[in-house]
Image 1 (tube, rainbow, N blue to C red):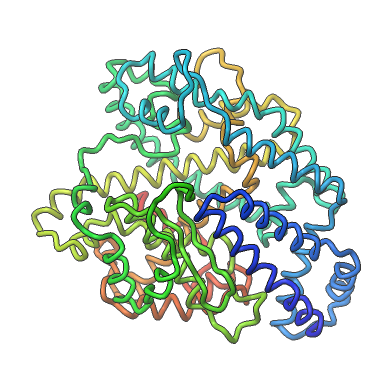
Image 2: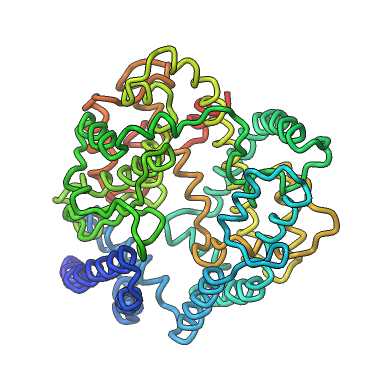
Amino acid sequence: MQQFIEQHVAKIKPLEKAAKEAYWEAATTGRQEAYKKSAELELKIRKIYSNPQEFAFLKDLKTSKKIKDPLLKRQLQILYNRYLQNQIDSTLLRQMVELSSKIEEKFSTFRPTLNGKKVTNNEILEILKNETDNARRKAAWEASKQVGRVVADDIIKLVKLRNQAAQKLGFENYHTMSLELSEQRVKQIDRIMWDVAEYTLEPFYNSKRALDQLLAQKYHISVQQLRPWHYHDPFFQETPQVFQVNLDKYYENNDVKEIAVKFFAGIELPVESILAKSDLYERDGKNPHAFCEDFDREGDVRILCNLKNNESWMETLLHELGHAVYDKYNDPSVPYLLREPAHIFTTEGVAMLFGRLSRNPFWMQQVLNLSDEVRQQIEPDLNRYMRLKQLIFARWALVMYNFEKALYKNPDRNLNKLWWKMVQQYQLVTPPENRDEPDWASKIHFAIAPCYYHNYMLGELFASQLHMYITHHIYKTKNWQKVTYVNDPRVGQYLKEKVFKPGKTYPWNQMIEKATGSKLKVDYFASQFLE
C-alpha cells in the first residue's frame, strides 16, 4: 500500500500542479490555449484514476481489511473513492464531459431579450434592484429565465447520463453517488437539512412577513400581489436592499488589502507571502470573479480577486484569504494525499467565518477606527441585514437540495411544476399564475456543479459552530456579537492546530468533533441568527 501511494503521488503531484498553473494562466490572461491545456491535464489526471487494474488492487485491499495503520487506511479510503468515481465507460465519460461543456457554453453565450433587445445578466439585476414599475420588473425577471428553455432538455439528458454512470457503479443514482463518494451519507445530509428547515421556518416566516410589507409598500401593491419579480434577485437567494445603511462609504477611503494584511497578521496567520504571488486587481481578459488555489500543498497558495475599496470586495478578500490560510498553514508531516481540507465545505466554513466580519459593526469599528456613535448608528441595520441574509440563503439552499435530489430520482417527472411547489414551500414565494416553463434550468449549478449546493449551507453551519466555540472557550464569554478576533493570536493558533493541520486525516465530522467538542449541528447557527 505504501509503495502504491508513493508511485501514485509521484505521478499525480506534478500533473496536479501543472493543471493548476495552466488554469491560473487561463484565469489571469483569458488565453484560450491555457484553458485548453488546463482541460487536457485534467483529462490526464482522470485517466490515472480510471485505471481498472489499480482500482482492482485498491478494492481488494479495502475488502481484505488487511490495512491496519490509520494513516494508510485513510489514504486507501480516499484513493478508493477517487478511483471508483472514474471507473466509467470511456464513451459515456466523453458524452458527459462534452454535453456539460456544451451546456456551459450555451449559458456563457446566451443573451436574453428584453423589449426587443439583447441584455446582459448585470442589466437584469440592475432592473430588479432599482426599477419600481411592476410590469418592467416582471419583464426583466421573465427575461432572466429565458436561458432555461435553451438548456433544459440538455440538462435532463445530462442527468440521465450521470445516472447511467452511477448505476453502472452500483449506486441508486448520481445524487446518491456524489454524496457517498465525498464521504457524506444521504440520510445524514437529509437530517441536517431537515433541521435547517425546522429551525428556520418560524423566524423566516416572521422576517419575510416584515420584508413583504416593505416591498409591497415600495411597489404600491398589496402583499398578496407580490410575485417572484419583486424580490431583487431572480431566485430570491440574496437579500433585497430594504435597509438604509450604505457600508461602501466606510470602506471607500481605506485600502481593503491593507486592512486584511493587518487583520490576519494580528491573529498570527500572516498572508503577505500569499498576496505576493496573487493577482488582485481587475484588467481586460482576466476572470472577473474570485477564487483561491493551492498549487502544491507545500505553501504555494494564491488568490485571484478584482479588488475595489468597497464592502463587497472586503468580504470577498476576507473569504478568499480564509480559504488560503486553511491551505497555507497545513502540516507538512501529514501525507500528501491527506494534506488538504477535511471536506470542501469545511474550507467554505472557514472562508465564511472571516467573510462575515466585513459587516460586523464591532469589527468595522476596530479596523476602520469608527467612533462609538457611528457604530451604534449602523448596528441595528447590520444585525437585521445579517440575520435576514442567513435566513434567505438557508431557505434557498433547501430548494436547491431537495429539488436536485428529486431531479436525479426521477428526471421524467413534471419538473417545472415541482420547482414552483418547492419555491412556495421553502421560500414562501407565490408562483406566477399558469406558468409552465423550465425556470429551474436557468440555474447554472444543475449543469456544472451538480449535487454541490448543500455544501454552502453546511459551510455556514460550520462557520457558526467555530465562532461559538471561539466565543465560549477562547474568549470565555456569551456575547458572541462582540467577538471579532482582532489582534488575538489565540484564534489563529486554535484554527491552525485543530482545523488546518489535521487536513483530511479524519473524516469531516470527526475533525469537527475534535475541534469543537461536537459533531456538526444546526444549534450554533440557530443561536447566532435565529433567536
